[in-house]
Length: 321
Image (cartoon, rainbow, N blue to C red; front, side, top):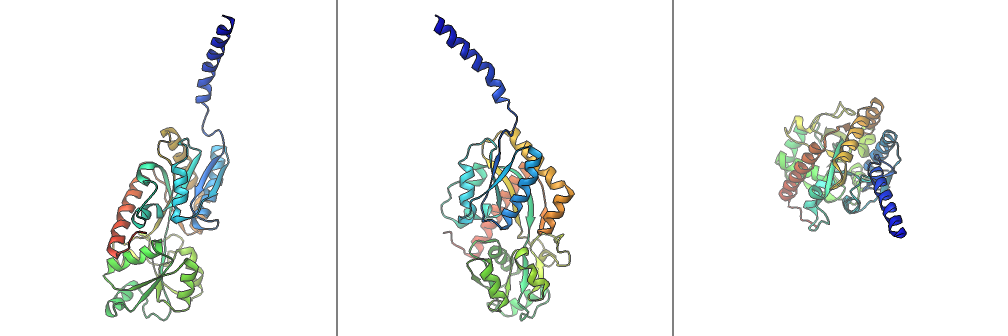
């Protein structure tokens, strides 16, 4: 009887302590922010900026974990398979919406298996020409391409990358025929442009800006819907081709099933961080446009971008790997 009474007391004590453990405020330990790119890339830079600010706000360290490979699929799959407790998050970009149309088999469904928290920023590419191409505006480039179908050559950083698809979207909307040459990485693509091996490109702004300023390439337009805050002197392509947009979104997600309260707390702190003046200045200096959103708005963005790039990929005749 004494043993039974002792067991009963221990059970009651455990039950009495359980509510305290369950009510432990979030976060109670460090948070891992998975970034699907190598150190130094745009995602990594944004992730580290956000991690510092978010860590200060939450009172816990936010650790960036680089898991590069397979267009971000490796990092996203890791997060999908993690516990839905708010301690493993994903910082991703537009590749999340492109991959379903580029890969025949995906290990997850982003719209089903991930819980959007907030879009954080958008970045754009720049349509640039080698000086030998006789066009000073987007309109002149379109006229030249129509006059000489198949003669102009675009260099891109690889199949299914944002620069590649930005060029394909331009071809579809402008009704022009231009060849594409795909390189293994942005570095090789830029070298080919500087050497005059290709006539034009749509590289990410940070990649090409130094050469624009040095006069080695001619900038005609940015791929964002409106002019970029960091490059107000360069017109948006949409000023000539209404509706054109090929910007990259960057945002934070968690595994599906993460408690709503945790998602809302993270959303609140991320958007508060994005609204800080020093944060805005830092992000604009990196060529990013601050966004901020609700989880529902970010879900709608991912869904619409997935549908948009699927149409572009079909129109371009790009086959999934």
